[in-house]
Amino acid sequence: MKNTKYSILELAMVNENLSHEEVFKNSVEVAQKAEELGYHRFWLAEHHNMVSIASSATSVLIGHIASQTKKIHVGSGGIMLPNHSPLLVAEQFGTLGNLFPTRIDLGLGRAPGTDQETAQAIRSDRMQSVYQFPNEVREIQSYFENTSSKKSIRATTAEGVNVPIFILGSSTDSAKLAAEQGLPYVFASHFAPAQLHQALSIYHNQFKASKYLDKPYTIAAVNVIAAETSEEAERRSTSMYRMMLGVLTRELDYMQPPVDMNDGIRELSQHPALQNMLNYTFIGNKQEVKEKTKKFLKETDVDEIISTSYLYHQKDRLESIRIFSEVMEEMVNE
Image 1 (cartoon, rainbow, N blue to C red):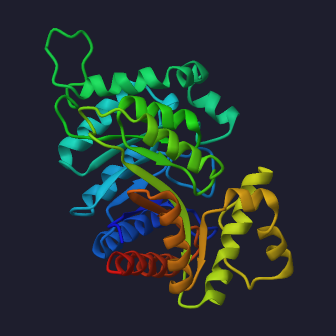
Image 2: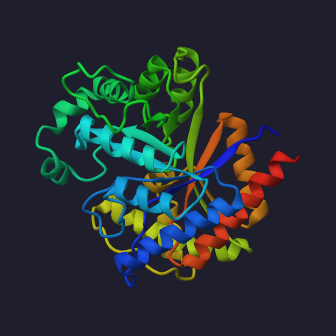
C-alpha cells in the first residue's frame, strides 16, 4: 500500500479538572510520544474564546512543542490569517524557522476559529482581510523571499528561511486557491467533510506546479478514537459527542469525562447534524479503525492523514495514537 504519512492535529483540550499548565504539559507529552511512534507532523489549531480549547496563542505553543521535541515537524493547523497581520505572521514563523530549522510548517486558513463577536474583538477589519486572503498569502510568501535591503517593509527574520506554507480549508474555494498557487492542500474533513471529494478533485485537476511544489500534495483530517476493545472505544467517544453537542448548541463547556454509552448519547451520536459533521470519525479497536482508515485512504488517495482525538484521559489519548500508528505501519507493509 502507498506509504501515507500520518500526523496529529492538537487542540490542547481542557478538561474540567485540568489547569492550563497541565494541559500544555499533556500536549508536550503527546508530541513526544508521537515523535517516538513515527508521526510526521504535530500541528496546533487556532481557536479563541472556548473554555475547552487552549490552543489560542498558536505560535507560542508551536515554539514550546518544538523546543521539547527533536525531529517531528511542528506547525499550525492553522493560523487563521484574517485574525493577523501578514507581516507579524512572517516575523513569528521566520523566527521559529530560525530556532528550529526545517521543522516548522505554516498552515494558513481564513475561518475565524471562533464566534463572530469574538472575531470582531480580535480584528475589527477582519472581513476585509477575509476577501484579501489570497493576496495576504502572497504577501507572507514575499516576506520569506531573499529580498533587497531597498524594500521598504521587510520581515528580516523570515528572509530566506525554509518554512513551507500549506493552504487549509473546508470548501472548493480553498482547493482552487491552493491549486492556483501551487501549494499543498489540507482539508478539514474531521468536522466539515461535505465537500472533501469535490475539493480534492478540483485541487488535482487545476494544480499548477510552482517553485514551492512540483506536484499536488494533499492532507485530510479525521477523528480517531482507538482502544483495545470496540466497547471501550465507544465508551470513550461519549466525551466527544457531548462536546460536539455543545458546539452545535453554542453551549460550550469543558470536556467531560466518558460515561457508559446509553440510549440518550447513542441517539445524539446518530443525529443528522452530528453524523454529517463527524462522518470521518473512526471509533473502535485496532482492526475496526484499520478498516475505516483503509477505506478512507482508498477513496481519497491523500498523501497524508492528520488525526485528532477528543479524549478526556491523557492515558487514553496516548493509547489511541499508539494504536493508530500501528494501523498505519501495518497498512504500509501489506
